[in-house]
View: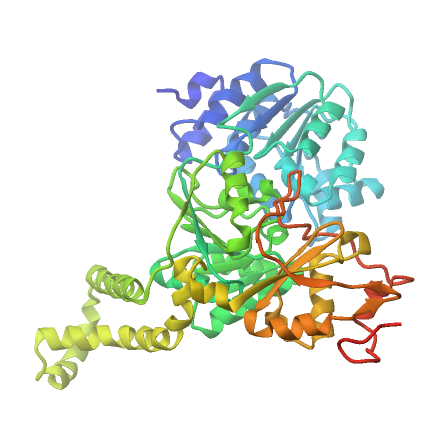
Length: 576
């Protein structure tokens, strides 16, 4: 069995590793550490989140650092404040026995002057986020002209977040002969370009398959109608009473809305998105790590850099646009060799995305049926019974029991169990008696006659060339038809046309509204679409049209302006 001592790591670092309880190196550590210690080479290492990449680059860097010099020799660039702090803490633990080695985190949301003072005292290793690093470079608070080792950690994440220009600028201020070590979970084209531009014949390491998901994660999907996503989320959560999960939403608004609804329904939930202040983010993450928050609802950007072990489930409330993002999401569970589950809540129109995902992540995503009321009640009661069984008796309770025993003296054991369990049973049973009927057609995959009878899909001859993305098109339709937001769903935008759904009982209203409708002389036609899910966009984005799109023009574009204008001749009138 391979151990850390066989990788060439020096005794001082081995002592720290042993004290931390690490015994067997992970696969990426076994492959990367000997290369980084023995060879003067750049490296590209692909491995999933949670596979021990920090030690894979951190231990060789710390061993190579000259502690007799106070100049900055090592630089680690990470995408988020959370990941920056996490890497820094780990490196400090590894370097416990290396006297004179100073590691300083550089990140936004903290005093830039305090960070500058820490660097000036002599920091051989900096762990930085791109934004704050650039800021301190502009102010000449940091000198990286002598850096010998530069690590780009979670490179794909940084590029997805738009940091390519920042990374390029930072690297341009480092020596050309430095060693660049790039670590990433996936290998999109942008990462390959960075490697080609800034690295010289790098060694390559791949743990598993490129872009593949971790093998200890079970992938599942559940088909629902778009309006029933929240009910499906509730059912999945209730079926796993001990769930410790991250729920991913596309937008900040959806993230806040879902979290608020969960809290209203009695769940220990919290939201994490870009509209929160840094202090609010810190409080939410502190509560989540302490498991005071059981379900964290997050956007992809806000969740980047989260490193929390023992997450049991990742739930995709909505699928992301980028395939690589799914790999990052699901990688939040199944860490440190534990088992995890990735659950996708999706509509029938998105079904084609599953096959695309399976090819990319090299894993099977199995279709599952949403649990029914019986399943939920069984799981909840068994969980409660097990919790009671495993609860240690507090010795101080004895003096309070005589009065309690007197009150309950007339009940048999069976009656006491029934009454105890009824406390939880009645709450759930009452809720699902009211809600369960609306879910019945969904458990048949939207494929039964009842589902088809309620759902109509339309084609409209407006697309991204008219400067529409799905959100703006939905806003236009809601305003034009005077519908509620939930009445328009499954909005997918292509180049020259788009698709959307309504309940079938609104079909006549929709068709009548667009019967003779035109904008600046151009007829806007809406017709019922016979086939769904047949439009798949090429490239690395999922099928179903662009969810990003382009912002509508505010000047000279009658489409963009229409939803803000007052119609002069009713729904079917001509807009001028």
